[in-house]
Image 1 (cartoon, one colour):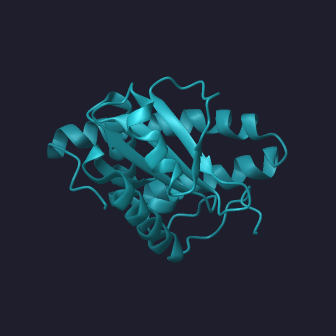
Image 2 (cartoon, one colour):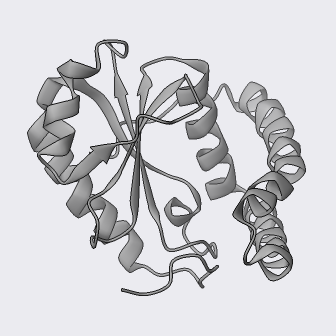
Length: 181
């Protein structure tokens, strides 16, 4: 399996890979999933990214994990109980499988909406997507062996883009479009 702790040039296969996994999740979750969306840098056409597919699953009954846990596990993902972010449930691939992150969030929550806004803003503002990708390249060159520092280093850029995205959302009356699958 390829090293996925790198920043790769955009790969059009990422969209197809999301569609494949997202379709399996949709079949398993059915109506439980209000939305299933491709998020993160691999969802922005043309943007360099770590080759890890991020998927956001939006559910109404977020707190009762038993409602959706088994259905996501049937697709090949494992719940990571030690997730410090209490606004999402975090699933990862089975050992040996392609690196994929599944983030389950409450439909309509701040975290769900912010993630979709960030993605949509970068999809429509290529200069900021390029600027963000350059920052990720820079941070990866500095912190290749220090993942927490790499992640922390992205913070200022992410917040800068979110401020722009917030203004943009007000200007256009942004709302999330239809679910990806």
